[in-house]
View 1 (tube, rainbow, N blue to C red):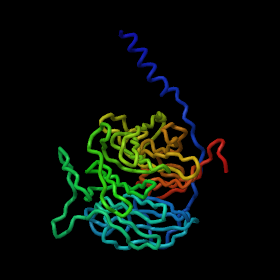
View 2 (cartoon, helix red, strand yellow):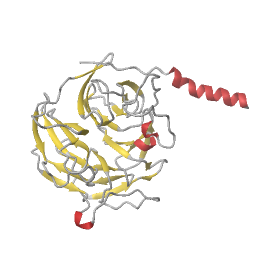
View 3 (cartoon, one colour):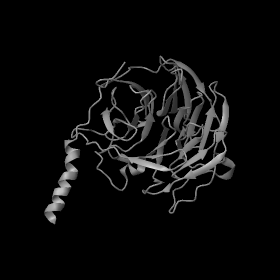
View 4 (cartoon, helix red, strand yellow):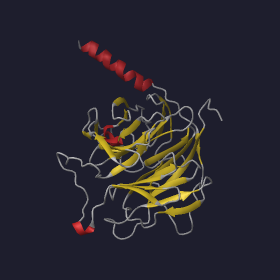
Length: 358
């Protein structure tokens, strides 16, 4: 009995040690974003690209006052050549602590602010056209949400540290909500509440920090369940489809951006290899899923059914290295944008996979 158990264990471990995951050759465009004099990025928490190849960066910049309670959110637009165009929503009431930015099929710009618990939609001209959530008011002795056990019940239409937004083919809106509520909230295209699904936990239909969310061309919703180290896929109606886990060995010489080398943690896999911090799905006739982890700081390319096709990058401060990618944008299979918290930048990445068509 012991021998059979040992053989089974070896069989399970062998594919991982023998696995050959292609390294995708790539370049990073040096000095791509051109900021005006006396304007700087803070932690680059979000990046998105519209149909005109304009790049939108949501940065934890423009901060004033003491660290606690400061406003750290600034939405900037750049042209296809990286030249600065404008700041959108300067001193906006909903700005507090930038998290992600997305652009929908109509080029509306969606900013998700974790600090104010709000999601704001701007039209392409940069005017506010839809608002979700409401920030805590100073007159109500505002203070941060506290994590309690068991978690407080989620409230329809109220967010607690939301993280991201996606859409289905009908224009329905899906928010990952997020650090406290551990759910997905669905609205119709007109902004009317439809439903929610998910609770805190590690089982099916449960989440632990749903940190990023994306949709494919069929309207399926992919949720980066970061605290559980997995991506959960749902139909637009919230019906579970499958789970994707990224398994890739960590190089022996890998070095973290800061702190000691993380050890695998089954209870909290946020810093495990393959844990999805940011996901995006590429445009084009064949779509691919890209996912980034914080350690060892790689981007992974997958088919939509979860097959790992390749990976690139590592932790560090140089070009082609990453410091906690917080959001990915992938307008095409081989053009990616990576917003990094720790390096205060966005890199434009050009991939050169073997056999790629130009």
